[in-house]
Amino acid sequence: MAIAAIEGATTIYSDDEDIAMLAEGRFGVINIAAIPLPPESAQGKLPFEAEEQDGSISQS
Image (cartoon, rainbow, N blue to C red; front, side, top):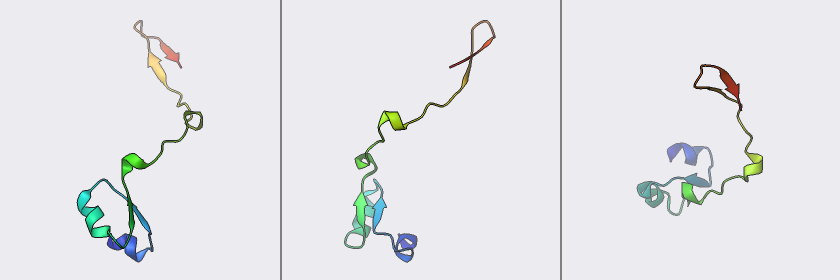
């Protein structure tokens, strides 16, 4: 929290109850679970190679 204060942060993202108590009045505290996920369309697909049972490589 010291770094957050020095850097002028206004919000801390944490699930730690002790951090939330210490930050009370100085920072807004947001639980990690409260952060909305981006829409699936914005989440790109990562290319990877999977090895088939016969030892060949297939791409998905």
